[in-house]
Length: 571
Image 1 (cartoon, rainbow, N blue to C red):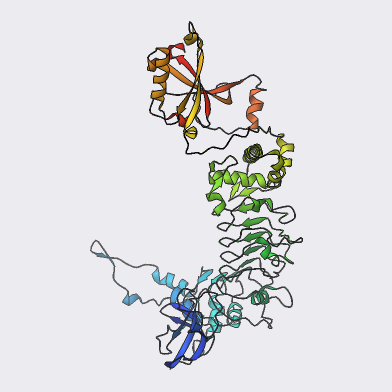
Image 2: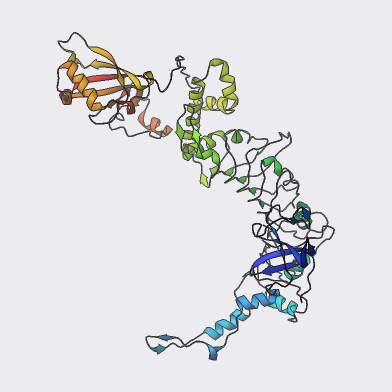
């Protein structure tokens, strides 16, 4: 029977776990093993069973643990050398190979033996991926004498993926990697090894990239491996990945001065200020990846000295639900920020404009750009001068609409929400605020809310020899244009389809743009330079109300409108 011990790494039908408890359980007969599964949803409890705490787990999940019988058919472990030989150096038996036929003719195998000889020595192979192979590097009694063989076979390996194996302590990793002199990229994701925080490990000087995702190492354990104090284990480290480690709250983790990229995705941070302790002593840190956390604020505790001097920040798929988040990104909090990614946040799924209209995610990205004047790219897209111009003028227009819809006494409250307003006014001029007279409130379901007051004005040709040149009628918004033409024709004694109705709006268009207008058009300052001053070249926008079943309310947004009536043969 196999000997079990606490902290032993085991594999059962491909599911990895760590042994946390050996002993009896309540009134159940015999001995039981309490294990913590690497998959947090695999178990049935968290070490507490029927009110009794038998062991504690590193994971915060409530379903990460189980009790198992010791007689399980555990997956057999391998040494590192056994795993490499099994995956990269399968035995070649030319006489036993299957005979291959093409169109009834036996194929002749040429060059395979030479290829096998090269494969057997790992020639031309620089990347080893031996994840999920039940590896225990220092497996007692393996008898393969693999230390020298590893050094010989792996002399040119630069990248090693040891993810999700049965390694139990960091000494195994140091002993193995010290035999790979050219190793630069080390991936240890999904392992659950222990780290002696009092120990100084042998340096692995060539390693520049280290991934410790889903290892559930504490900040103190990570600091032991990455700290520059004493003899650093990774003195050349440039990139550190600590994703899926259930980190949350304020976490202090000084990193070595050489680190430039830090990945903390898939954790449980709620504010950027939670990461205050990560940048201490790391002036080289320029990229911070925080995808799929729960971040919704920049500085939750309003710490006066909070500062993250990074150039690139990834906040995709977090919990940002307000533009106030970007107002807090100031030259004090993130003074060097140039590249930002925020796609997938709830803010961009339900944006409402200043006048209550729904906006698209693209509109939201424009409003984001306008709030961050020093940003050079958003969501991997470079921000051009024209895009910034469009974004900032659009944002200024939205502020003007919001100011127009509040009493003058509340203007200060609105401007507090838009700290860039004064700067935008200096660049583009202060917008004209057109406040509308406050209208008496009425029930939106009342008859008054369903009616529109239409003022009909006759064209010169129709008004000839007529005493009344205009009149006003209260009409339902659901009235079709066919019916509207019928009313006008009956009043004038003219066949309805011989008339044309033209809606006169309060908007203006440049000459030549009114005809065939199909929607908003981007404006570029270069257009004005090419066309000159443009004074006197603007005309009122008019919309022809073509005969059809379309409702009057789809043309008129407010409660009043002006319509010109003319004969079709006038033009």
